[in-house]
Length: 120
Image 1: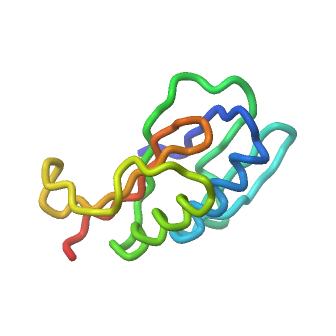
Image 2: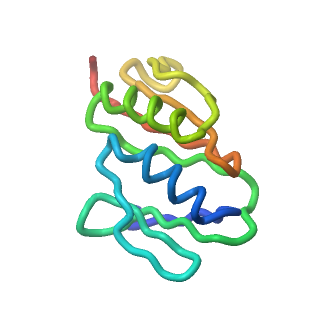
C-alpha cells in the first residue's frame, strides 16, 4: 500500500492552484505547506506532495474517485484550472469492463487521471 507520493513541478504556485481546483471534486485540499512544498489530500493527512524544482520526465498518476460523477467533475475542474485534455471521461474497457477514467495534462505535462472501478 502506498502511503504518499510526490511530484516535481516547475512552478509551485501555478501547480498548487491547478491541483487544488482539479482534485477538489474528490475531496483533496492543501493540508500542509513548507517552503517550496505543498501537501494535498483528504483531511487529516496529505498523501500527494508537489515540490518546486526541475520536474523530471512526465509521469502518470491516478486518483481514485468514489463514483463516475466525481470522475466527470474532476475532468471539468481540471480543464477549467488550465489542464489539457488527454482523454475525456469514459469507459476504458481495454483495462476492465468497469474502468471509468478521465485524463488531463497538468502544467508540466504530467498525465493526471481520476478513475472509478465500480459499475455504472
